[in-house]
Amino acid sequence: MKAIKVSLILFFLIVAGVSAQNSGTFTARYNNGVALYNSGHFYEAAAEFRCAQEIAASEYNWAGATYWVILSQLAYTDYGSALIDMQELNRKAPNSIFNRDMVYHRGRIYFNQGYFEDALLLFRQYIDSVAETGEDAQHRKAAAYYWMAECLFAMGQFDDAERFYAWVLASYPESPKREVSSYRIDLIRQKKIESELLALLQWSHEEALRTSEEHQRKLRTYEFTINTYQRRIAELTQAQGAGVTVPRTEEPEPQITPQDFEEIPFEDFMSGVTQDYHEELLEKARQLGENIQRLIQNSEGETW
Image (cartoon, rainbow, N blue to C red; front, side, top):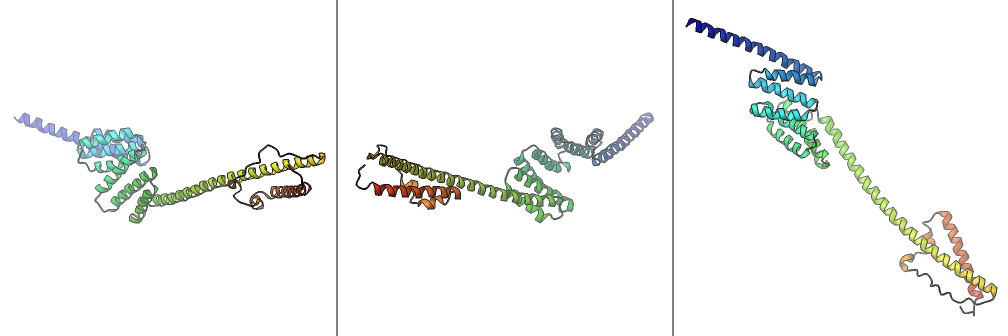
């Protein structure tokens, strides 16, 4: 009987010794992982936290080590492994305080993968879960609001995004996200100005094209008319020199519609042309008028 009692005592002493040893090893691994994480050595930190996770003696310690494994994976953008460990954390320690923060980090993963609507819902869920009023809790809520704005910005909903950025500025003046939110608001307003200027430029360009096409059409009409009269004058001049009567040509006269001229005087129309070309055509018109008048006087009494 005494031998059994002695054996039990030795067993519990051994268990206690092993437990104390494991606890010491867990703490050493955990602290080493934190130091590596803070120095930016995320792969090494993940390995240390993984070792601490495997020798954790309690659910709380295991959940804490798993939480830091996930943060390390997020730091070196291994989103697939991070999502798997998030599911494992929720399965093995559903009541852990770390699960709430996993909602926020899952939202960050979805945002980085381009699932903006899903990320938006997760950030909203995370904000609703934070009931504390302390400074750290306020910073976390401000960060979630900021990432909601980033989701809307990425989806092109600039007005809604601007309202969320403005909410961060107004409600969380001490948040680390304040400066970047202010920058985003300025960027959105700049984008709006650029969009308005682009629309105005496009309208001006289209209007200029329509004006140019109308101008070219009228110019071709006037040139055709001038060429026709020049040809008729040449025929009359040649006929008078030969002493014959010129019959009316069978070629139909150009049919100029009111829409072509729109009752615009020749000089008014030509005011839109460059000065050199304007003077040249006016001179031609004057010469044509004089020639026509002279031919009419010389041809009185004659028939076509």
